[in-house]
Amino acid sequence: MTRQSISFTTPNDEWLKAQVESEEYTSKSDVVNDLIRKARAQQNEIEWIRAKLIKSEKSGFTNMTRDEILAKSKEELRRNGEL
Picture 1 (cartoon, rainbow, N blue to C red):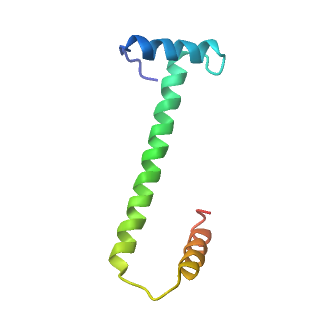
Picture 2: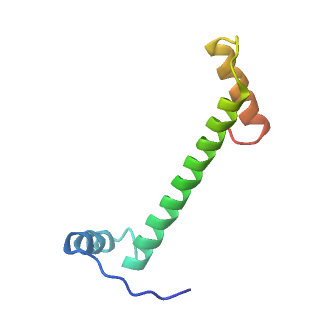
Picture 3: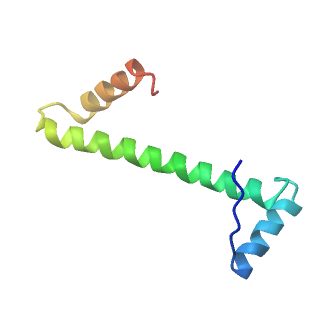
């Protein structure tokens, strides 16, 4: 694991200490790594949504109803193992 030296503002340092004191985490490093993991997962989700929106925009218009679109979307997600 790579070691880093970073500085925190007083409020952020106090928040980190509180997370460790609550015994949810064993160290400030654990808190920071968890925050980074969550941010990366969120970024992946945003990229997935963005890709779906771009694909949808390129596919053009449809005459399907809202319910038909929803059913088709859910079926696609099931096929791709995303739901």
